[in-house]
Image (cartoon, rainbow, N blue to C red; front, top):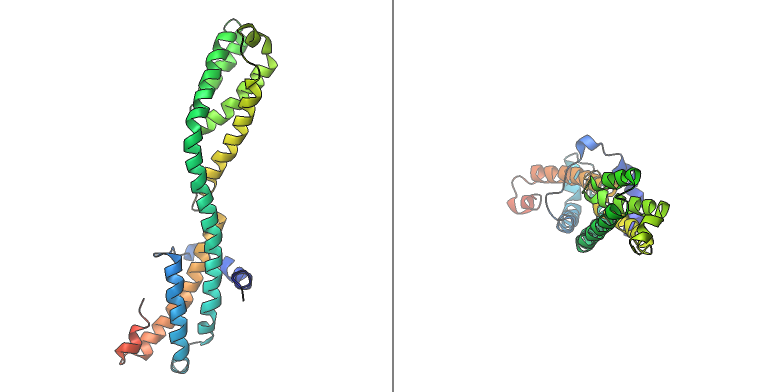
Length: 228
């Protein structure tokens, strides 16, 4: 089976793992999967002995497809995580220029509307916030304000062509900010699914390891294969 097929086979059981039982990985997933696949080989060799002690030997057969499902969802999560990391880098590169452009527009607007108390108050309100989200929203509000009251801007020779530039920049920075923040939360669905897949596999391989250490308690070489 492919990684995708293994995931589809195990998807319902993975999703069914209660959040209260979710265990976070304590080593890189690729290393963990390798150790589980090695366990599957060793446990299969000891299948009769483990089954003779009362262990459900079907657990052995579940290790490889479930570890494959874990690898699949890990790849999905890393794709999202790396996209977020790229977005963070791009935001850091573009944000200073966007903030500078916002400040320059507000400088021009404050002067252009200095004799229009109603509009001047709106400009002052736009100035109030200075967070990343504020900057994105400010660029849009500046555009709307300028398009609604263009005459005072024209009187000071302000280039009205900058208004659609501000709108476009607001949109692009909004998407970039969403990408940078979207996967940061530990509650991200794909990350939670990865953690659930890890938890389910951990539970199953833990049972096998427990039985292995029990069965081969007098054979240190074979017993050692069931340690992590």
